[in-house]
Image 1 (spheres, rainbow, N blue to C red):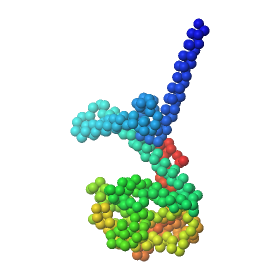
Image 2: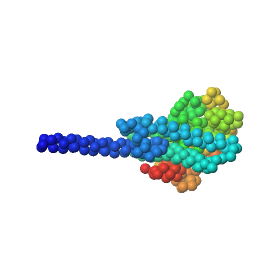
Image 3: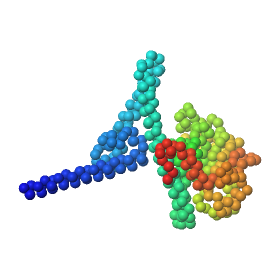
Image 4: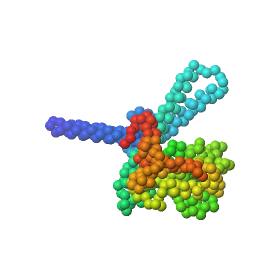
Amino acid sequence: MAQFSMEIMRLTGSVLGGNQQMVGYNARRRISYNDFVSRHPIYGFDDPEVQLDRVPFSAQTAEEFATGLVKYQIRRDEERQSAMENVIELLARGEDVPESFAQRVHNAVREVQASEQLALAQHVVRRKLVLDLMGKLLTRVRERDGRPDDYHLEQTLHSFIVPMHVMGHDAAEKRSRAHDLWILDERLAFTRAFSSDKRFDTLLRASENAERSDLIVWDFASGLGVTDPLRDGETVDTSRPLDKVMIVEFKKPGRTHYGPEDQIHFQITKYIDELRGGEIEGFQRQRIRIAPDCVFYCYVVADIEGDLKRQLSTWAKSANGQGRFMPLQGDVNGSIEVIQWQDLVNDAWARNEATLYAAKLRRG
């Protein structure tokens, strides 16, 4: 009898231990899933318990969760699309609408709104990550001033915003699509009409100048540029010359020494003289003319300290009092604005503040 009781206790302990292990595994799995959805909000389209039941019990990684949920996401998108198309088709036929029509419209709109919120959250999570990383990268570059990896970090900062040595309109260059120019200006979020760290004799027809500008943009999100709306904005409209061009120069954060040859005004006007009245060598040998009276919007991103602070002492202050501004006059149309690195990051955070708040995120 005593031996039987001992066996019962052993089996009971084994079952209880197994249950505790299962509870612990489920808790860890739930934490992993919550972390996955926080990074990829588009998969949070249903209650967590429902979503966890849809994936294999062994799923614990982001890839395993995504693999298990993607078919449900596609099915949900197809159902939502079909519901909207049915509503549109019913209205187009001009027939009498049933009593349930208002509810059908309400349900369809609600599904679309839910989908938009998830897509927005996914978009915002990525932007937050980009801005957090950029802030840390700026700090790192300043800390490593003069160290052996200093130059590589400076290049990393440029490449972080936009890939170097690329022409954005080159369809064969996939890197041209992977940029974060929205940090500079929201209108540049999807632009492909830019040149990043390319020699003028590569960018311009008939140029023999081997110098490089950090960034030249001639399409500000179709509204300020010359993309052809009849070709989905993928092809540049070359029927009229460019009347607006943006030039951006990135100076190393923390840099304090600027010699006589590093005069901002001289450097920018030299680039403008090279561009004005010229022709950009577009993809497939397109000729993109630059008007002689083109307006040049020029930006220099730098820390205003040391020699640069003295160099800009006679320039007008920007609206926030931290940057500097100079209108270009005489034969040149446009302006030069010097923006501090931290102000660039702060402005990008401010522009995304509403969407961050909507996604229940905050600046890290």
